[in-house]
Amino acid sequence: MKKFILALTLACSTLPAFAQAYGSCQVAAIDRYNRVVARFYGQTDHRGVCQNALRQCNYEIRMRGWYDLRCVQYRSRW
Image (cartoon, rainbow, N blue to C red; front, side, top):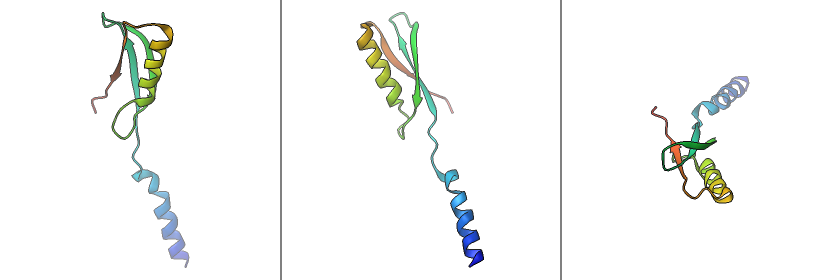
């Protein structure tokens, strides 16, 4: 019984190593001259899209009236 509990404990302690880690991402509000006006940070989802930061960027563009800006996600090269 002790060996079973030990094996179960070891198996459960390794589960976080198998979990897929999603990285952080960055979205920038860019004007037509490719200048960065604002930056937004978030976490990538399972598709690699920075959904929350893109939503926040688009919301800020609408609320502030920056209609000549666009939101661009920076992608890592790893």
